[in-house]
Image (cartoon, rainbow, N blue to C red; front, side, top):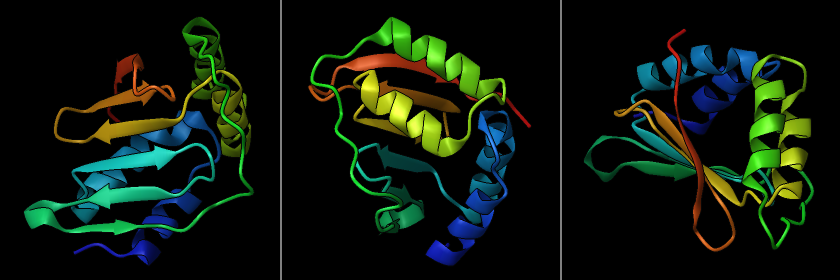
Length: 130
């Protein structure tokens, strides 16, 4: 079973979106099969085998997620983040501004899906290997 402390330790290694593939591998090694990250305050839910899950506390002051999503603008900002040009707090603000309410990472399928406030899928992408 994984702990919040182990997750925090793995997340602490991340400096930009370019570090995400390594983070994914670290989380898989902990036994995490899926997680949901909520843009409004950065709290997350992590899921493992046999129904095991934990929820983390808020990571930052609440952000207002735009009511209308802009998938194209989000893709552009995500690309910049993945190239290592922005840090995580900036990416979260960019996500909120473009209408992303949460993202779900499925480590079994190695995909990350971004959703707007209506639950509509804005983007699904493959997670590159580290």
